[in-house]
Length: 456
Ligand code: PLP
Image 1 (cartoon, rainbow, N blue to C red):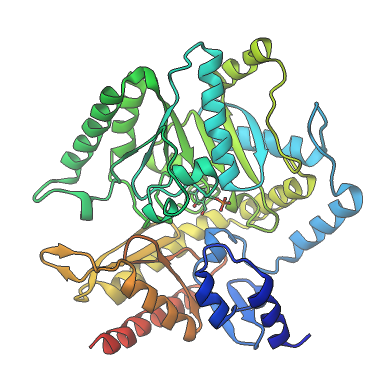
Image 2 (tube, rainbow, N blue to C red):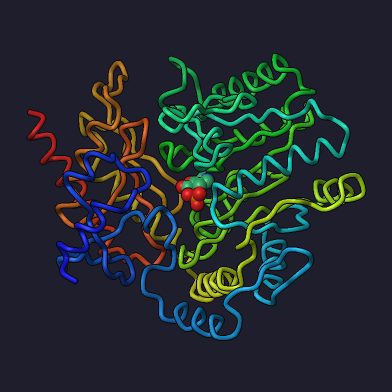
């Protein structure tokens, strides 16, 4: 099949996620055909450095032979059997043990899904079930945060603090509330220190819970580092201060580790990095490096005790997917985690992250359109603003970052413009080399210069 006939099929029949439908019909797809390490190759043979590891997920890099062999072997042995009604399989039993052992705090059980979105949906159902078992049917509201990203199902889309995720979909659902994002640069008041900012955020959360009625608030969901909403790194002391409020009002904390989990922050979990002590954790993406879709909800012992006692009250726990605990996905996860551990990729992510941060600061600090260079571990971001003094964002948002990302792609570097902020992000595979990082940053800086010339 020729490249153009594949593109015709795509243009005509493929309903793309997160894509402008009419623009796509006009301009068609960019079709990727292969990948190795941090490099992707398109159907025309053009190479790109993938500074985003797909969507923050291909941590061990593309084209890993060990993974291909492990998946082939498991496919031959047992590609699938369901796990309803006490059915099990070996890879998933091993993986559940590994996740409970590795996770911070007193974790007890793991429930498996297929995506971060469905896992966050499961989280809300678990929290509701938990309160129903405890005889607290009123305690159902979920507090999320502005700029948070938690997925696209009816509930997880509701939990996103990004207005674009709600437009046209009749979301958010009525039981969701939002707290302020912990972004000192844009949300801090004139002269407010980070410490004062943290104290204010904790007070605002307390006020919100009291105004709603603590007996109606069930859980708070947060990414340790807000990724898709702008790469927002919480200020020191933020999570301990928030947790004190949550505990006082008996509100569960769900840590959404979909991006942070398994080394991206330079530690195994973002919760450990930022002092989060979750009652429930969501993981996906980096658990398999995206070789096979998999997500998991990790449940702490106190929450599990209540949920398990629910079987006496409600009978069967009637929740689960055809593909929950799929043996190929569990094999992908075990192989991926083995590779990350054996090859020291978490330490490498930290070292490469330091290099990335240093290069981003060198390339972008002081530019008249750059409001902030930030990041943590192997995640970096550059935020642009129309004016720095006073600080004023571009309207429409993402105008400049969108143009930079488009130009960078022509130059062979794939970055991402994040919604609702003029921010471009970097989240490359852990196997990225320093020379590749240098090329990614240089390509993006070149793109900024080209876009500035066009803007005049
Ligand atoms: N949670 C976070 C923090 C994410 O970044 C994402 C996806 O980017 C999700 C949840 C949703 O995951 P998925 O796209 O696998 O449904």
